Amino acid sequence: MTDMMRALNPTAPITNEAEAKAAARASAIAIFLGVIWGLVGIAYLLTAGQAAMAAAVASASAESPEAAGMAGMMAQAALWMSIGLVVIQLVLGLVQWAKPGVVIPIIFAILVAFGIVSGLLGLMMSGQQDVPEAAQAPMWQIVIGFIVMVVQLVLHITGIRGARKLDKLRFEAAQTY
Image (tube, rainbow, N blue to C red):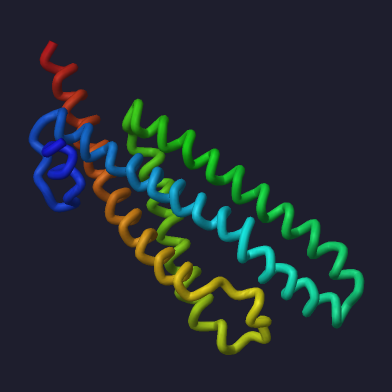
């Protein structure tokens, strides 16, 4: 456990294969953190989020009756897509934990960085657009989401470092035979 705690530090030196494997698994921990946050988002969609979606649908259908029928379908599609993405994250997290590599951490680091940038741009532009209040996420969800993404980014960077070092150590060990 101490190897894992030390390996989660993105600036800690990695000297052996156990530390490299623990550091590479930091990316899997970040993915599991994303799965937990995704489950919180799904729970919100199933409870209070439904009222927000209903208000947004009512606002949209006041201007265009055709939008009312489509909005209900889109709400269900968003829910099922959220569930599907959480399942995909869970599978990729398990793969990264079982067989640490560099590809999954790089992909997720890019996705998390994109999420941070697009979230910040969305917040900067929210006052300029004519978005109904009901369609916006609650502030607690936005703030905790940014915190989770920053922690994930740090853990994915640690995972990239660990996976690269693990590959290097295994390559050097194979060369000595």
